[in-house]
Image 1: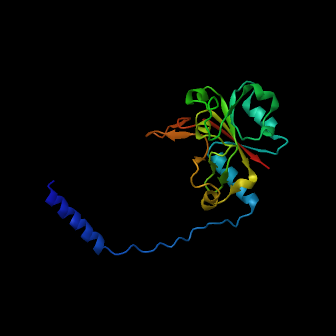
Image 2: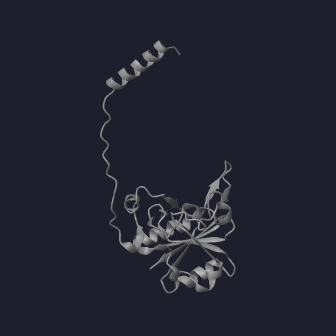
Image 3: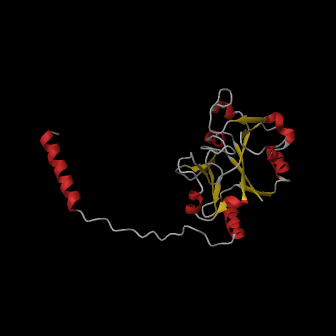
Length: 214
């Protein structure tokens, strides 16, 4: 295209933009805060998780280590982020535990994707969870770790404090640091091909255990 032709096209575009009417203001009337009782929100969240084929458990600080030990089994080698509360973990699994850094990458503490692929499971906490969509948000905090550690191992045990469950997406986003590396989890990793055959574990863990912590 010649220079003159390009100039003519650009002139027409500018003219069209100048003559076009202003876009109408869109009224944003969606809900930003929930009025539902906390118990109802937790029930909604659990229903969504079960529908997505995640397994849900109810524990408190005293029973949590025993539940995690049960989910790990007798020999699973697992990874945890540096900031995870050690009192949550079963003491007799220390020899099978791999500690990784959360965001920093100091020498000798960061596992490669190949290293992570060789562990059986990962245990993390979470930032916030949205009941409306059944979504758990991880944002790279010290108790959640780098994004890779929750995407590569085949089994994710995710601890969700009940106080961190909200109903609506705007409520969840308000609790997440805008610049954080956010991972949103809605059930185990799954996808379907053109024949709608479900395949699990393609983009993340095949198995998701969610522990609702009171």
